[in-house]
Image (cartoon, rainbow, N blue to C red; front, top):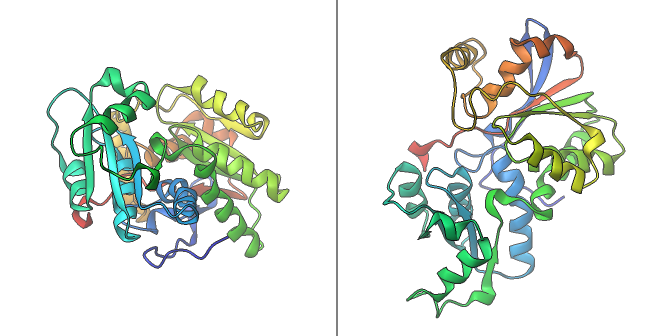
Length: 297
């Protein structure tokens, strides 16, 4: 495990008293205002690879409100690297996420949605554009959308190793899951460590087959439990009940909680019927960061 970069803050394990009992929260949301939670966990392995291969530019993919694009731009600036974002969409785009990415020095290159579906085609189009042909492409590290791939699992091994160093061995880890990179990364790390901790993944959008397929491809499907039914309409959607829950949870526990990611997982644990099936003893909630602090971006 490499030392954490100086720009990261401490991410402690924090006890949290709930009506069902006391759990622990892994406060990865405190790692950084922008590169927080699983954004850092998924990018840390890619940063290690960039340093090993002496790459000078990080290139990745995302939509207009992509936290991954923004986190990659911020990470690159912190590390003295350049960054390129291939942006999905045909329409003119401007919002605080994209503005912040540009402030961090990211060069945003927009492609049509049809082109974006084939990432190799999107990359080839960008490479052929005026002003890009002279770029030293051998110095560019291409990171998959969302930071997935084998390098995207490295940061979760670092997390599990840090727990072992503290002699902390939880019974289960609960988290919000969008692509299953976090779920699979945790399961792989736990298996390598010989720990019998179960991973409880709460999908935040309606893509369970895709998430299950990733787990199966990496041989960790038996180690995962999917807690479904808490998608609240799908990705980036919510309900009045969920929004009210997040506001009250944040007020009561002073723990940031939003309705896109972490709120859905905490709602599943605390209020919905599935929560009655979960024993809180030895349970850790992995706070995966949620939305970036755009005021500090």
